[in-house]
Amino acid sequence: MPMYNLDEELKSISESLVKIIYTILPQENDSCYSRLYEAMRYSTVSGGKRLRPFIIVTTAQIFGVSRSSALNVAAALEFIHTYSLIHDDLPDMDDDDFRRGRPSCHKRFDNATAILAGDSLLTLAFEVLADPSTHSNPNVRCELIKVISKAAGARGMVAGQMFDIMSANKNLSINQIINLQRLKTGELFSASCEAGAILGNAPMNLRTSLKGFAYDLGLIFQITDDLLDDKANDNTSTSSTEDTKPTFVKLLGRDKAKDKVQILAEQAIDHLRVFGKKAQMLRILTEYIVDRKI
Ligand code: GRG
Image (cartoon, rainbow, N blue to C red; front, side, top):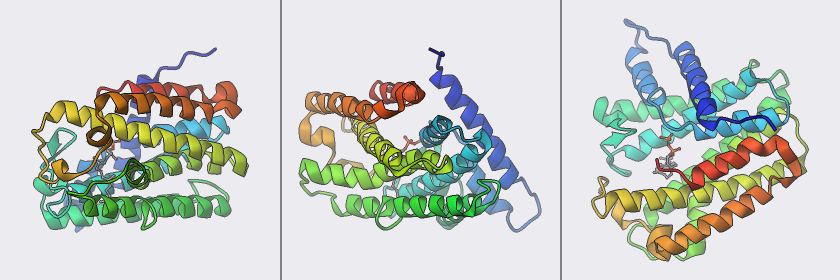
C-alpha cells in the first residue's frame, strides 16, 4: 500500500493555493483595488488548516481528476470559507479580535473593508468556478456552482449562522445542535467532497456516499472544535458571544461528546467502503480530525 503523508499534502496544497491567490489578487500599489486586494490576501494567505481544499483535491484524485482543476475548486471553496470567517468575526456577529493568531480582518483594516473583502471573496469564488480553466465542460462548471452556492447560501452555511445567532441563550436538543452544525459547517464539507466527484463525472450513488461521509466528518470536526474550545477557554472565551451558544460539549459533557466522535468516525469510514483503497487519504483525514490538537 502506498505511504500517505497528510501533513506534507496539506502543506503542498496550501503552497499551491497561495500561488493561485497571488496570481488572482496581485499586489498593485497604485490601483483602486489595492486596499481591497490587500485585505483579501491578508485573510486568505494567512494559514488555516486548508481542510476543505484537502478534501476536494483528495476526492478528485479518487476519480482521476487533474490536480490543477481540483486546486481551482479548492481555491474557490477556501475563498467562501474565508469570507465566512471574516464576516463571522465582525462586531455584529461573533466579535472576535483575532483569527488564526493575527488580528482579524476588521481589526487589521476596518469594518467596511472587512465587509467588502468578504463580499469580494464570495463573488470571486464563483468567478473561479465559472472559468473554463476549472473544467472544460460547462455542464460540470454549472453543477459545481449549483452545489457550492446551495451549500454556502440561505439553505446552507448562512442559514446555519442565522440559526446559531438565534440560538444564543437557548436550550437546544441534541438533534437541533446537529442540524445547526450540519448547516454551519457540514454543508461546506459536503460540497467539498461532492465537488471532487462532480469534477470526475462520478455517478450519483458515489456522490451520495461521499456526502454521507462528509456530514459525519463535519460533525466530528465540530465536536472536536467544541472539545478544544472547552479545554482552551476554561470559561475565559475571547469572544463576547461564544459563552451563550449551545454546544455538543455543554449538552453532553466531555466524555459523552468523545464517545459520539468515535461513533461518528466509524460511521464516516463506513461510507467510504465502496471506494476501497482509493479513499485511504479520507480515512487518514478522519483519524487526523478525531485526534486533532488545533
Ligand atoms: C458569516 C455567513 C457567515 C457564516 C459564518 C463558518 C462560520 C459561519 C463561522 C465560523 C465560526 C466557527 C468557529 C465555526 C465553527 C467551525 C469552523 C467552521 C471553524 C473554522 O474552520 P477551520 O478550523 O478554519 O477549518 P481554518 O482557520 O483552519 O481555515
